[in-house]
Image 1 (cartoon, rainbow, N blue to C red):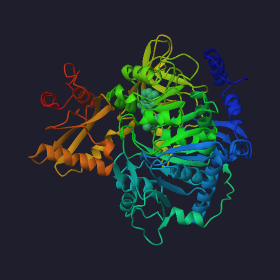
Image 2 (spheres, protein in one colour; image 1 turned 180 degrees about the horizontal axis):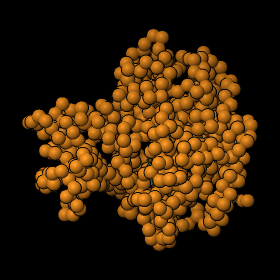
Image 3 (cartoon, rainbow, N blue to C red; image 1 turned 90 degrees about the horizontal axis):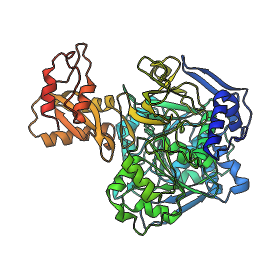
Image 4 (cartoon, rainbow, N blue to C red; image 1 turned 30 degrees about the vertical axis):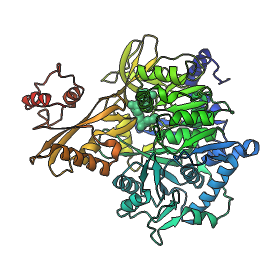
Length: 631
Ligand code: PRX
């Protein structure tokens, strides 16, 4: 069957085929990639035990598919246009030939430093081409990378390194984002004090800063690269061999190491990049995400390179040196497809339209958003002022666990509504369920969003804890993958994500588990207990509101709040700092000791007139007190 999508009717036909014959559909897609050895079976699955296998028996290498197979025809094509933070620094263009050579050399460096197939490697790098090189080189030698966002603290690095027993870490001397300097190597040094599994640390000299190098452990990227040649035979991996781990927050406990495998991830990430954005070979693509999040993995490092595309890679921040920087970059590099987050759109919109003056955005053909719901005001501003009313907006809904876009209005098909992720990608079988897990049929309905059939890029496990994987995603509803999101299906059958229904809060598109923040806050010497909830924020979408119980008198409230924020920064990262902190005498708890977050959420949202039934609380008077002092 012809799987190309030229209009919405094509989509409906391809979607029907993909649901009726999923294995045929996905194998047709899979044949468009290079395999060393074909698969014996397209799919084995069991949602009860959470065991999923795609393309079992096949052998491939992801970096071979991202690089080597493009060389004969388009080796000279630019793979990445690197735009440095500093406006005076020169743009660096890297062709597929050059990227291939960089990756092969670095793959040899990894091997020379003892890395073997299956080893876990932590990557803690800023948005520089070497970050992509490191990821592709790990994939090439069969090492499992775990990228830790370079805004995370030393404690977060060591937690992640220890959870997956990483043997090597790759970092740089430092990063400059806007006018802020971040000494990455120093943070890594602090983390490594408690990381016994790390044997080597490879340091890229990005800024020429002085760093402390520990003999025997730390080596320089530039010296190591000189010791190896540029030939590297890729490691041929089983389709189900692990590809990477990416830590993400959940409702409970510490972050989970979501594990993706080679074959299925490649197939769906490559397919979705091309399909969602309707990518054409001459186009320039720019995804503004950081490589520390899944969007940076799937739509900077892997999706575009799997398609031989040209991508912009930007080192800096959106509003530096002023709020016109993104529009300058689009103008300068004639970007055709621009993919960013609603938070970025809202924050740039708030600076006003003067920053758009003199910027030629006429190269833009497709716009995208990801990571959080987009409000109508931001959608229209993006559509009218940035897309000049002619660019489709792909509102892509997906998750770290899904690996690739699951729902979106596909570019070029002409059916879209502001704030709607619209319809599932071919091959994705969605279902809305009620609290009991019964399917909600028909249109004009709302429920919890589940997926009822496997898709190739789905996570396979939580690293080292398959039980947690099974329990988190497959135990709430029988035989379904539960996303944790609420969702509406409107009268026409189109989908709109309404937000998380668990204790995960989406701050500026960063997923933050309330439990993690509470654990950090409780470390303050005056705090004995806390409860963190989300509340709506004009720019960040949501922000954190912490209710805390102190067992000591707090004399200086402002100083206290700064201290609490500092603890959260150190334990997690600055992005997880609560915006509001309220000291309370007690928390609203049920007789079984469970905090009634629903009540706290309403108070944080300022909706205090109707808090619902509070009679099940041990001490209902507490609610009145909290309400009176709400911030
Ligand atoms: O709540 C949904 C929200 O982000 C969550 C996934 O977060 P993360 O794993 O960090 O991945 C973000 C990048 C893919 C989802 O459970 N989310 C993601 N995309 C959208 C969204 N909410 C509304 N609309 C979206 N387009």
